[in-house]
Length: 396
Image 1 (tube, rainbow, N blue to C red):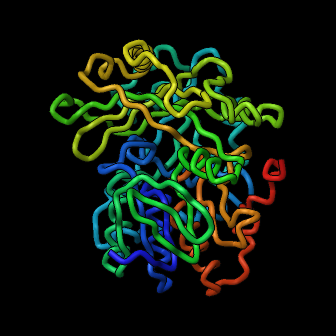
Image 2 (tube, one colour):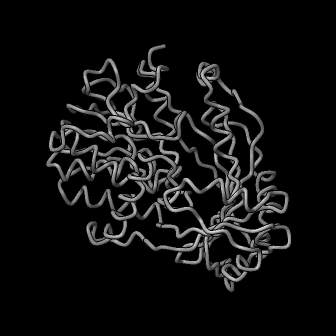
Image 3 (cartoon, rainbow, N blue to C red):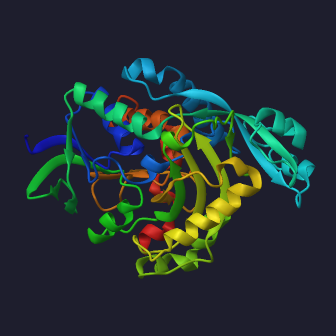
């Protein structure tokens, strides 16, 4: 393999693979580097949901609409199945909450979800126990198999002449990096390594306002789901993860992210489940904000907590044999992605990460950014709004 490229993309999850593919479509020589084979983090253990309907601002609504339109033709473009479908998403509302108020709080979304009675929710998802619900929300949701989608992007990049390398990146600096024993050179380097991007750039003297949660879930293989067939996806109407992220990214908290084993509040559980085409299930999820990449956790306790939570809504899933999984999920302080070149690098090191709702918008933003940096689209008002310059943390 040669050691000089136009672009090196670090991280072959869905963000990196999509960007590498789009850069290759613009005619660039691209090297895509991934540390794990097979993938082992956020893309691998994602639910695969495409919440294109949930945007509350004109920016997110525009990108969400473009995102779902892109997904509807993506399999034809890439020439591989990504198991794309559009499916009902049922979002239970606990008995302690007023369903009318919950529904009203969603009216500014691009496509506000419909309010259901408990029985209507049960009709859509027969596995749902509605005895402790005051209602549910219903949205038409997109869904993919995330790891297949990342692989399809990477394969399509290779077909266009790009290279894929498995290796651990170190010594990152403008113009070059080391992977294994070799040094690779490129005019531009894009860091799409999710949670790992923070420590990688920190080690290179480039602090970025990128944060991460530790997500825990249970994965159930197809051989254990005989007779189980979910008709919908299920996630809570009242998600707690966003509040967890907000608490961990207040300006006063930022320096603590550079210290070991800092934690922001107790872990939270957002009960949900999705079944994939092969019958496998992902059930979760616990989220915690801890500054260490590998915090001390108790898998058996977490699994028991997830099982107790899912028993309240989907009791048929409670005792299915499964495997505890852990993934790091990156995010930014304002729930918008971090897209653009880093200050002090002469435009040579780029960040494409921090997507709180990554799957719905990554392909369309990857396409826009590849065109933007290739001067095929020299001005882009959406990319401008996602620039890292919106955060003053970079100046510290």
